[in-house]
Length: 536
Image 1 (cartoon, rainbow, N blue to C red):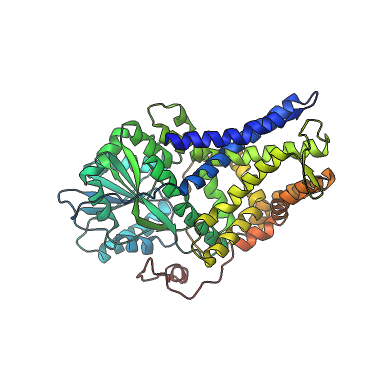
Image 2: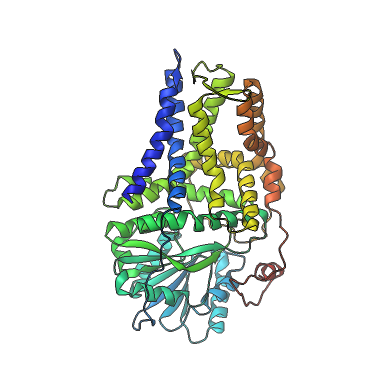
């Protein structure tokens, strides 16, 4: 781990200090140059992290599955807990699938509702239908009348007031999750194995199901690359992992000893950090997978990312808590930086355009000492830019296994570049909203894989990106820097076409006529929409 951190620091230094030595500051431009350089140095943290991780992937052995007992231990109790809030699509069907092979014996099920009162009758019917589907099992339903402290408050109320503390373990199930049969008992066998005595949190891997729209499919590609490349590398190096806030088996006694705060919007980061603070690890069970939905369109993704941004940046308070290990604080830092990058990169782009167009490089510039054909530039900037572009454009192909995946990953890269400007603008708005209009209530992601974006709302969200991109493109032409126009073309073109791209990404894609062999869902659909959702 120390070697990894040292390597990442070295790469960051190689990206930053040669640029600093080449930087020429003109009279009256000291503050401008300082802001430009600090922004560049901050963005280089992510470049160094990515480059070091991708290189380490080539040398680090992938992690092995955690040991587990041969038989499920007797005398241990587990609560399968699903926290819901106004879930109107597919709740019964998903719960029925997840309870199959994961209820009975030592496992009880709790449906913990934070829904509005109007939803209570429908949820009671769902609980009763599940009791009919799984006779002889213990299925409980509870709706809170006071929805305080978000989802963590829901769990805390169950633990302290509804008998949750009497279970040895609990498994947190999201409303959009599909858990394959035998998963809970498998995790219980791992939790009770003596070699895992210092682990109180077992996170399952996740995969995206029902990627019926282009956006959902592209997110599935991104997650697939992460699970093959980033996850095994970081996990093998650090020996710990984060909490996803769901799809995990948690030691009840340990959780109550650590007791993460209940007033945080996103408890994902806090769970693992709190357990780490009292000396116990959070790991990932690489041989278990839980399937979940992805945002079907841009508007759903935007709302979800706003909640994630607020939760991740709020967790920065943990960086000053030295009772939390360096590893977990590193995870907290990286989680927040990915949202701050939107603000910093947008600000840095603004400075770059302003310096070239309005100041004619009066604020700062670099000596021209290198040329390719008719393009003249600075050699340090050229190689730094080349290294950064190679890092972010080449990493998916490290894990591509065949030509079909190369084609699929190339398509994902193109889409990510075309949506970069839109993601920057919406990302900035998400971060700024934390200051001016923070989320006061828990609003879960819409779970309908066929959800369509209202045209008017989509235009309201994307037109500002188009207008800003048009202005920046005009400035790029005025700068007379051909290389700058070339480098920014995919981003600015995608920004100009943002309404069309976001509309297209929310449309249904052509599905290959092949059954999904990973999750054989047996179901009794209740509506035409659910029949489409669960026919895979």
